[in-house]
Each structure stands twice: as C-alpha cells, then as structure tokens.
Length: 113
Length: 112
Image 1 (cartoon, rainbow over the protein chains, first blue to last red):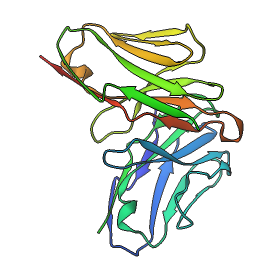
Image 2: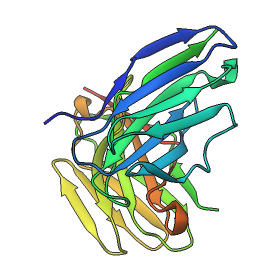
Image 3: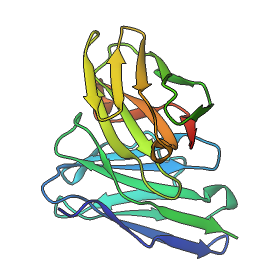
C-alpha cells in the first residue's frame, strides 16, 4: 500500500522567505508527527497531531514554525521568515494510533541560502 | 528528561562477522523502544518495537532485545546490504504520548 508521502522532496529558499512543507500520511492513520534531522544531528521532534488537534507542540523551535492538519489527513508545516539554521531534512511520520510504531516519509530537504 | 545513547557511533564489519549495537536509555517509565534503519537520503524504516524487559524480536539477520536499561540489536552474519544507520528511540508517555526521543544512531558498514 501507499506509504507516507512528502512534498516537495527538495526546497531551496532565500533567507527571510516563507515555506510550506506537505505531508500525506498513510490512509487511516490517526496520529501524525513532524521531526527535523540536521546534518550530524539526531531526529528532533517538532509536533504531534492526534486527528486534527496538536496535543504536543513542545518541539517547535520558535514562533516562526507552525503546523496544521485538516480532515484528519494532510498536514502542512509552515516556516516563516526562514533562517539559515532552519536548513535540515524535515521528516513526517504517521501511526495508526498514538504510541504505535511510526512510519516515516522520505523527507523534505530544506536549504536556506 | 529522557535520554537515549547509542554505541558505537560507527561500526565496520566484514561480511559474516556478527556483532551487536547498543542503545542505553534513561526514561521515567518506558512505554516502548523502537529500532529503525535509515539509508542515506531516505526516511527511517521501522524494524522492531519492544515494550518490556526480556522481550525479543527477530527479523531475518536482526534480533532486538530489551533490558530495564538498554536494548541490543544483534546482527548475525551480516551482508553488505545491511549497511545503514540504525536508530533507536524511546516512547514517552503522559501529555507527550506518541513522541519518540531518538538516539544519535550507529552507522554500520559491512564490507564484502
């Protein structure tokens, strides 16, 4: 079956611009997660959705980062006024319910110049 | 705060040379421990979930075990295609239920 998909696969943007990253979870998965992976760093948790609500936003690094999920499916991560330190691979994962195994998408590689 | 430490950082093996990767953790009540494999340029691929000390899971040449303080990923007679970064992660409970805290990973290289 179809796995988690993310778009775009690569994004190059200029410092100060806004970007939107999209995640399509596995059909029927109620939980959705965003992580960030920087060069030489481990996976860093950003935000978690259960359905359309986000019970845990603790990992968002600043108020420039926001995310939403609509219809219990697609999620968008938005980064406003991008900075060079935002350059990383942004990974989305979904799971059939919170606490179960998470299935990851291929990621979006964001480069801020 | 939950912490996950993986060792070694990198491991080079000859094909057929069995070894183990370690994941030690400090959590206030383990809800689950997950092992993932990550190939360059790809997202992590789920391998195993372990929930309680003494539990073991196997898949092909891989076997994961869990104690109260650490988990091991045993690789028996590895092949070059087993080369990847192996990640472990612990599942947090409470209001952050569902959030995984990852270790830094072990980069495994298997030479033919």
